Each structure stands twice: as structure tokens, then as C-alpha cells.
Length: 107
Image 1 (cartoon, rainbow, N blue to C red):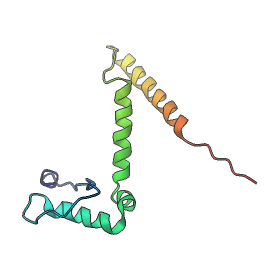
Image 2 (cartoon, helix red, strand yellow):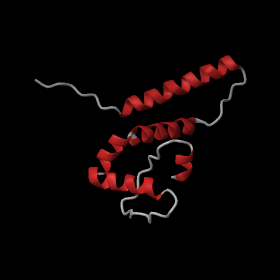
Image 3 (cartoon, rainbow, N blue to C red):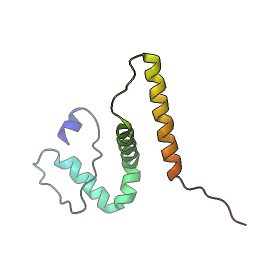
Image 4 (cartoon, helix red, strand yellow):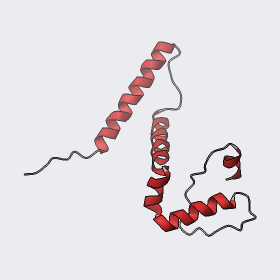
């Protein structure tokens, strides 16, 4: 938490379910204890939406999916690298579309 605060950012690290408050003299204890108390007050699901953690989690998951396709570009030519990235994005969009439910109004 201190390393994050030194850079002028806010730590959005969800505490574990069985987390306990840290002693105040521990490094980063104040920020972590505030997050823990807010998480317990609001509930974990509401805290994640309130803090914006759900967006970060989605981005991390999507980046992991992109890396599963391949971590390196095979093409050497810049134009072909662009095409390769576009193809990977199209494949990811197709996979994502398969998991999105299609809802139809009844009546």
C-alpha cells in the first residue's frame, strides 16, 4: 500500500474474506484498514462496484485471454503486425460474443 501511495495513487486491492485489521504502525495499514472497513460496511459485491475494482478485474481477465492466444507477434512487417493484432481482436470479440446471453422480450 505504501508503494502505491508514494506514486500518488489509490490502492484498490480487495482484502481477503477472513481479513483482520492491521496494527496502525504497520506500513500501509491506514489505507488497507479503510478498504477493509468499507468492504465490510458495504459488502464485497457493492464495494467492488463502488471502488471500480470490477472494471480492473475485467481488464485483467481480458488481457489474460489475449495472452492465451499468443504473447508474441509472428509477423516482422509493421503492416502485417497490425493485421495480426486486428485478427486477434476479432477472435477475442467472437469468443466474447459466444458467452453473452441473447434476451428476447416475451409477450
